[in-house]
Image (cartoon, rainbow, N blue to C red; front, side, top):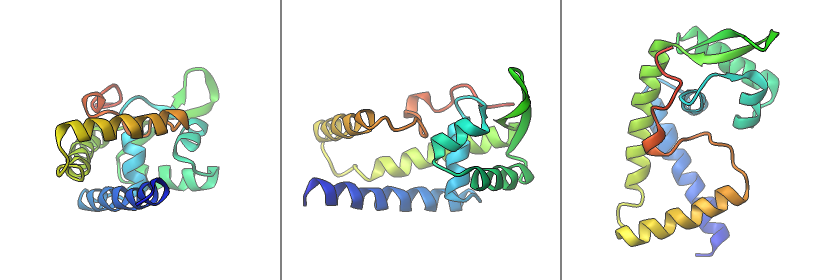
Amino acid sequence: MGAVAALVRSTFLVNAVYADSARDHGLTAQQGQLLCVLMAQPYGMSELGAMLGLAKSSLTGLVDRTERNGLVERRPDPQDSRAVRVALTRRGGVLAEEFYAETCRRVGELAAGLAAAEQETLAGLLGRVVLDNKVPAVFLEPDEGAAGGRGR
């Protein structure tokens, strides 16, 4: 299999695992992404839109639905009185950590058939592709997962 087919097919594979994990936690895949992004810190709407690749109206709907579920809240932006920052609620932080840990476990299992050295090679190559293409940090490294955004 060539690099293009392998990358595209692995995207479908990871997306399916991610969606299954989200569903098992009562989330949509996009809500899961939102919670994972917010684990690091609260973000403004324009920052979230850029990170998640969503238009303003789509992002507003996503935040509205997630807020109605008590998982995120809008807070005034201390730098701009006209803007808001989206943050995890305490409940959202707990769910985000559970979802994140389970999703890391499930995605990690995808490469379980590879030897440790092969896993390191795979991580190095994929890491270069991600960094070379300036992919936003929508999913933290497993050891960074519980960074700054929880318990708010």
